[in-house]
Image 1: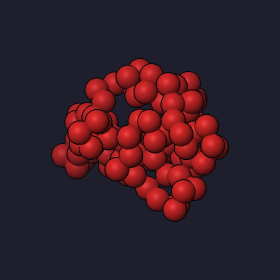
Image 2 (image 1 turned 180 degrees about the horizontal axis):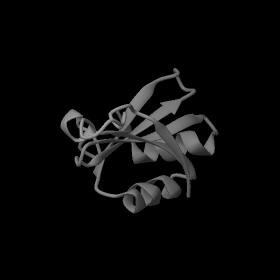
Image 3 (image 1 turned 60 degrees about the horizontal axis):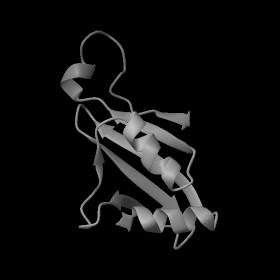
Length: 100
């Protein structure tokens, strides 16, 4: 678990490898950070150390910009019942690179 202040510190030290916005269906997004410090993958948390949940991309962008991050990957998981309509493979997860 990582506070926004810790993300800012790592960003200033250029130790952030990747930031990922993760959304499952229509649930709020989580922000996942991979850093060079221990090569850990951690969720961004609020001041109570609860996973930070954001409702929209602009909200996630604002949090990252304040920390000096200007690129992330979006990973969306589409519920199986929505993905089964038709012959497409929408249920497969794909990362989309975002620059902001």
